[in-house]
Image (tube, rainbow, N blue to C red; front, side, top):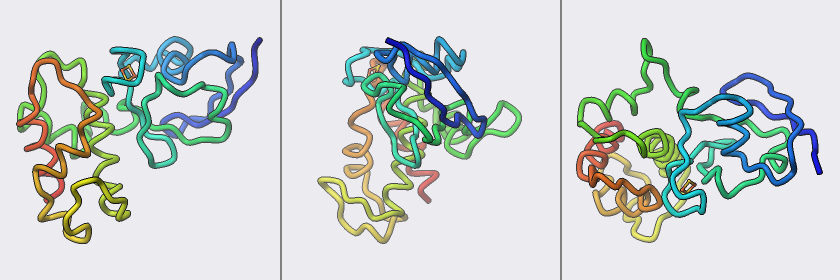
Length: 167
Ligand code: FES
């Protein structure tokens, strides 16, 4: 069966009529042509499909689009543009935080949300002092980013890029 859903993507209101089984990932890629968000495993294991929904990161392959009525969704296309990169995008470039680039949109969306989680004092398993993101440890960042897999193994540069933005 189909259902209508209205949500905002990167600041633009969207109204879609979708098969109720359509994932948010497929709605973004196939119905809105926002192909920056990638499909890796389609099973919630790789993080390539990470987007930000009302400030929190989710794996969009695990979420049905019709559950997002009224939500505000940000994809990598909404973070920055080639002329005006988001600071996290610029840091990934500066630190070579990618190789093939396939996981990068998800890594960047996740990283942006991680810094917001830290600001909001949402603990991780290895949080030390949540009020001092400047002293954020590599361990903590690695733990928080552990849902985003990079098959090229660019992890150390990814963590350097995020640390750079964290200050
Ligand atoms: Fe969603 Fe892999 S495509 S977690």
